Amino acid sequence: MSEADRPPMAPASHHPPPPAKRERNKPLPWRFPKSSEDDALAPERVRRIMASSSFSEADLDLSLLAQPRMRGIRLHLDYAKAEDILKAHGISHTIVVFGGTRIQEPAAAVRHLDAARNALAVAPFDAAAARNVRIAERVVAKSAYYEVAREFGRLVGEANRSVEAERLVIMTGAGPGIMEAANRGAFDADAKTVGCNVKLPHPQFPNPYVTPELCFRFHYFAIRKLHLVQRARALVVFPGGYGTMDELFEALALVQTRTIAPVPIVLVGEQYWRRAVDFEFLVDEGVIDPEDIELFWYAETAEEIWNGIRAWHASPGKPVQPEANISAMAP
Image (cartoon, rainbow, N blue to C red):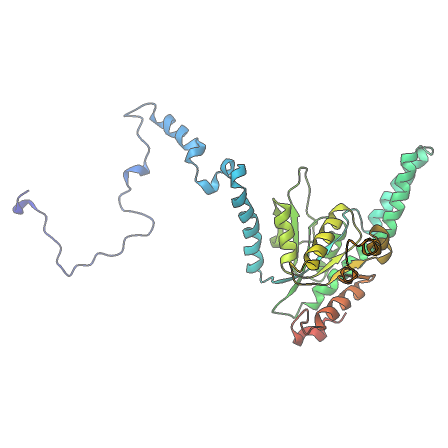
């Protein structure tokens, strides 16, 4: 090209404006698939390519993320999602409530007892039906704990209405029974309340009283447990079965070994717990030390639980809430 044919250069003082962030004036060639006018089979080939899992972005490829070798990434995602949301809501301290899923509110427990008695009336010599009645009667008796857990959740929720910093929030496993009751009490007080559900092989539903933006469903039990303990300023354990026992003994082992700093651990329902677990027997057998049964105490009412937690935190000079608010926390 001769000098005469070259386009004139812009003056040195010319400064082009910044290009548009997202769109060009003239689209690049790859914005359009190969035309069928040039190759009749090209559109179908492009469709198949784009439908292949290899074409998926890695973070959107569920088949990739489901592979065993991706477990570390899944663990991280399981932890990070809840962590980010809890931080965004300013939740740094929780009181965690554990307890049996089968401990219903009194009206529901009575309905189940009536159904069991009706079944026994139809088959009065059926040993299984008779046992179901006895169990239903025990559940009715324990339904009083539902009301205690609900009242405790309400006390914690109401105590934090005026607190702007280091707010204490009720956290449960998001299930029915005692967990529902504690979330429900905080819900009654119009307070935020957290639920940590976990994926199970069968369908399940969270209880309806968890704050929607704070109800998580974890893939891994381990990550769920981590979040249940990570921010806990107290662990309150109501009567329950295998799941409740699992959470209790894991917490006791963590505190016993000082893997985590000691926190109040309250067993609600002394009669139940003394029969369910003979801690004195464990001491006498030499498998735990006498000091290990000082890691927890018993309580019966919501006020006893709440006052005990406040007293525990106040004793070393570290109140469960900022000192300015401690007087407002009395039930």
